Image 1: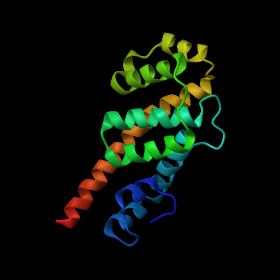
Image 2 (image 1 turned 180 degrees about the vertical axis):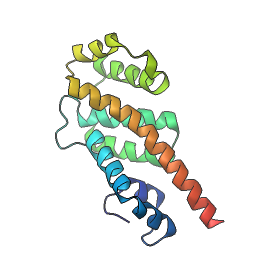
Image 3 (image 1 turned 45 degrees about the vertical axis):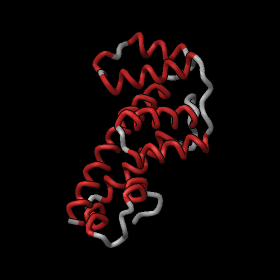
Amino acid sequence: MAEDDLIERLLGIEPGSPLAALRLQREAIRRHAQGAWRELVLPETPGGVSHAERAALALFVAQRGGDAALIAECRTILATTGTPPAGPRTELLVRYAEMVAEAPECCGQADIDALAAQGMSPQDIVAVTQLIAFVPFQIRLLAGLRAMQEEQAA
């Protein structure tokens, strides 16, 4: 198992297992997925979107996707970062997350302008949007690898 690999940790993938060997065949994909998670949820420099806001958004999207392990991970991160303050900005971020997750084609300039009005830079808005889109990817990846684990165990 690669050090600090979220997917391998959540699935309990053992080093040397067939699933670990399979993941190593696509090492760059594994490494980039882990790097994206780290940079989107807990970047070294979070910019205008706090770690708490990022963790809360990741939890919100994970809950919508229903992956218990990822939900627990997001809750753990949120416990570390603290909860973002309630208010218009947090409410807007949640509404934006719902829209991006459910009907991204409905997002328009007015939505971007509303985020900017809450103090977010274009880079912040891109990061938030990427985070909202990345969590479902992680959920699908976990589901697929979990199915492979179950098949191997049968």
